Figure 1 (cartoon, rainbow, N blue to C red):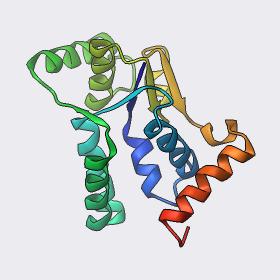
Figure 2: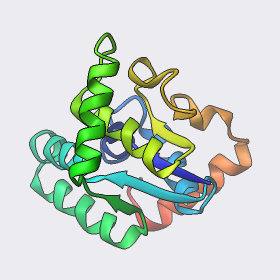
Figure 3: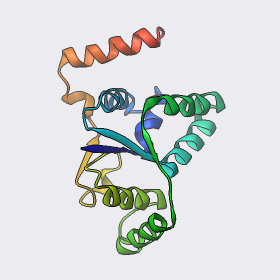
Length: 161
């Protein structure tokens, strides 16, 4: 069992004003605890997240993300020639869908590696193209005790939270 993490999950984690901030805190906590097996993301997702964080929240936040990623145990998937070709095929096959190159690469990566779950808030792009999407409204599915456990953990590491 495994999960691939999309851009919005990381960005909302760092952006307290994002509507999905709490969902991202809970999702990433459970992902890092191994709820869906081995976590992955792609180098293209990392590029998007770093760019968004740098220009919307500042270089220090982008650097904090990259540092945390190195310590996280999340496996990075790089684009080789075969994965690039498959990404282009996905874009061509689903040209009627609102897929970015990164989205197409996520689909190609999931197919290639047999990844079962996608952590994403972009259901519009991925619905029906990946086996399982986990994201929007995730925190609302948790028990009060579990939500409090996660928030207590966050407060231990971020006292101003």
